[in-house]
Length: 344
Image (cartoon, rainbow, N blue to C red; front, side, top):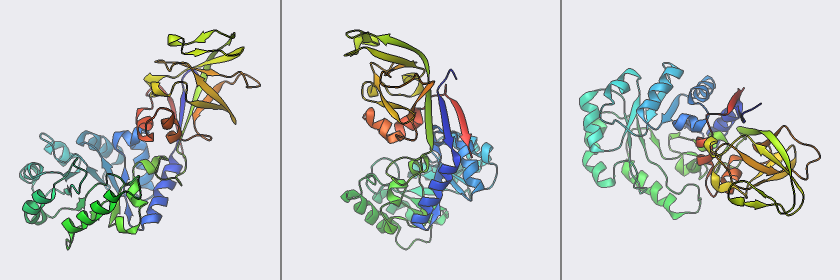
């Protein structure tokens, strides 16, 4: 093996989807934007669809078109970015459901595609996408006359269960949708874990499907094994890598492994991360370079063929912690050079 190897457990994704659905007891969609967080939206969505998933969410129309090709007819594919200028033909031909975010998008949609399904996003305080209360109040009757298939909003602080913003947004969403005979959705993964008051008619988990926080009970989905290219003995006082960033404090054995920041392994985790040879932890040393990293394997009984960065001993969120970021960023940046194995 000359390239790092990424193993993706599709059955674990399905198990996580089922577990979140069991928590909510409402319809469970799947967010597969950004190519299913870098894990292949077509494969992931097909596996989930075979297990009963009927609703999927993507970020933009182009993702929706690609997903429709992979899934075929049947499942609903909703587009968070809504109906952008020039999207009408793609929305119609791929039978996508844009989530309308503004008056301009509403006018564009009903003029270009009268009668075509759409959803609505309300801004309950995140100030990112969706209609604010005043805009929604002015547009509400017109929008409802067009029979939206879903009304949704998005929580800003759901990964902090005690944050007052959660309750404020929930109350705002209820106030903006009270009495409407339209399916409602407020929660992604974090909101699902806040309890039944946040579940409404549909949940939209994303990161929790892929083994990430805040779903602490998620099954791990990704394993990343990185091959050892070369080993060398480094004497006390010698340095390793760019900028002499690591100096040997003892006679050391150093392994150079085949992955770097071009493969989505963030440079900031240098000198903080650990990897594993079987059950033994070994430290990353020196700088993360474009294609290579160096690891102190002095304490291993023998030279390994590869070292594991993500897997049995540490999650994608643990690796994100080494770099001061979040699991989302690690997952969505896992590099195209990896060989990949989707297991079922």
